[in-house]
Amino acid sequence: DWARLAARYARCAHVVGADLRNEVRFCPWPFRWPSLSSNPLVRLTFGHSWTEAAAMCAERVLASSPDLLIVVERVIWPMRSVEPYFAAPLLPRLAGRLVLGVHHYSWNGPGRYLPFGVTENRGFQRCAHIALRALGFFSKENYGDMSLETLRGVLHDQWGHLLETDRCPVWVSEFGSGGPDNSYDFEFFQRFVTCLGALDVDFAYWPLNVGQKASGD
Image (tube, rainbow, N blue to C red):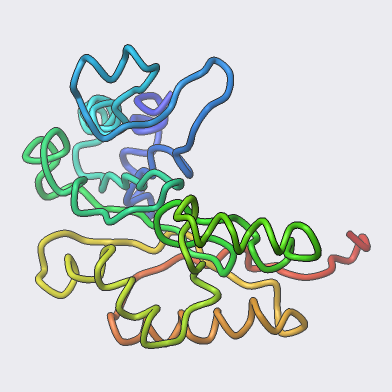
């Protein structure tokens, strides 16, 4: 319960924010999908407004700990611009408290991306991926497929413009790499870090203990 957690840590100076929900996505059971619309008609198709739910939860959290920052992550698939989040119902209700959270990996991408489009891309899968992307069912590129310039442009359009114009804080709350043994993954990592440095973005890296563990796992 977020209200209970907020009250418990209200006097802890090192607890500065609450990330309300990790990777908001479609739920197969009970069947529902996240929407950015508060239109009651959305519920007829089992949609639920993620931004309205986040605003209501945030108000409960801030009632217990009014100095917290509230991190609202974007819907993870399809992965769109955060611009619609910088509006009602999150604002003006969370003015001065709102931080928008984004995740980036080589295997995901903008829009209706094809998860793990490179690692699972052999034989029939490869032909199917090419066809589905050509028909527009999936985005043409994942983040890991993009050149540095393309990646920089996509990040700017999705959320970087909010930072450059000082309209709203954005936190890269997850990104990472499988390590240098995975050249596709690691090359994306290097390009992405270059973009982070250019934008002077705050971030969290996941996971810090990447790679084989002492247990052998």
